Amino acid sequence: METYIALLRGINVSGQKMIKMVDLIKALEELKFSKIRTYIQSGNIIFQCDKTDPSQLAVKIAGKISDHFRFEVPVVIRTLSELEQVSENNPFLVKRTEDVDKLHVTFLSKEPDLVDLRKAEENSFLPDEFIISGKEVYLFCPDGYGRTKLTNTFFENKLKSTATTRNWKTIRQLLIL
Image (cartoon, rainbow, N blue to C red; front, side):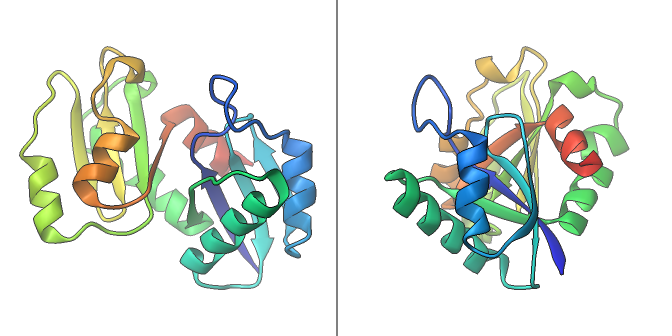
């Protein structure tokens, strides 16, 4: 059995795409996942299942949500070991010592290609900064994420990949769970 983390984009935000976590757990139990847990109401799910391709899991979960709740939700999957690597390799903590309350990670559904990567890196939104590493975008937003232009939509447009962002506290909590 492998431990996975499903990160749903855009549920329970401003009264849109409302899903109760108990209902979500029941729906996912139909997919034969085990040890399903959620963290807060914004679509963070930890579960176990047989080892499989994460992109297939994302499609499966998105399909179940669509069937059960009647709306589309983008899903990004990481294994527990991948999330541990994200935590250990944050360049804003490894090479610098930024305030963890100002750190976020945008998770991409796929690694961006070189041309798209260069286009994204041409942009500067100081004081906000980002560093792209594989399928993650590490963010430092000193004035808060609510004020940045480095949004999911920005990265989806530039990197041609589904994106969902979590603050550093959420990442740490997911690892504890």
